[in-house]
Length: 343
Ligand SMILES: Nc1ncnc2c1ncn2[C@@H]1O[C@H](COP(=O)(O)OP(=O)(O)OP(=O)(O)O)[C@@H](O)[C@H]1O
Ligand SMILES: [Mg+2]
Image: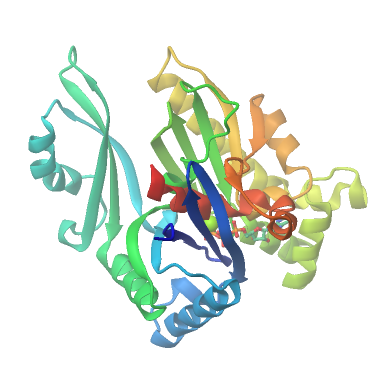
């Protein structure tokens, strides 16, 4: 029997990214990958026509990629999901599973019967008789919408998780087994800041300072059309020496806002885990290609800053290499979703 391939699908607000992987022996092999712009109103809209537009482009991309798989691991947009770290009295697994819904109620700004709850025990302290739990609550309407979209595209959902959970699987081989990283995915509508401790996601926060707001700021402040602003952003970004630093200066408040949030998360980690060290920032998402961004993040945080390559442990052919090389980290969420199959 041929090895079973699976899909990882990241339905971003700006682009749909798909990765198809298969396991041959001990090797993960890239069967296909691709991306396509998300229709403008896309996932934010509740209008059936807009949902159909998403289904249409998803099916178009699957066809172009000639995928063989039906099974898909997909992600829910981080900004629409509530992720909190909560401290509870020490409970057994069984006690926790029966009480989590009621415990969760006070932390979630939605009626508890309108969300799907997922959780992971992060740590236990016998001295304090307490446990720390990562709580993830996804609105049922969102899950239903995603289920409709994938079913209409003739796919079977194997799992749904969040962008941050998927990204947290992509840790460079060079980092030690026990290490703590800050993951920063700068997309279009949202930037996701997460902490991964010893390979587990332990904290997530989202901020709206991301690609779209960067472009909008340039358009508004300098009077460019959105497409001109996008081009300026991609060409000059945070480069202080181009155009007399005009684009850099315009982008500065948004970037500073993002960096303030990153620094708050670092302070949170240091406060919660005073014996531990956060060593590395792992960047992903389309906006990390903005000129000057990586060195800006590195200099603001004084931490080792790397753009992740989610294909580090995956074999691919020469044609795929061209597509990956320029833009590997763009597919971080999609690869993180897909490799779930073999973990
Ligand atoms: N070279 C570049 N320089 C700056 N920004 C870029 C560059 N290439 C892409 N981007 C930005 O990356 C963003 C898209 O990234 P990505 O595909 O990660 O977002 P998304 O996953 O669709 O969105 P979200 O995660 O917010 O839903 C866009 O805002 C785009 O402007
Ligand atoms: Mg994204």
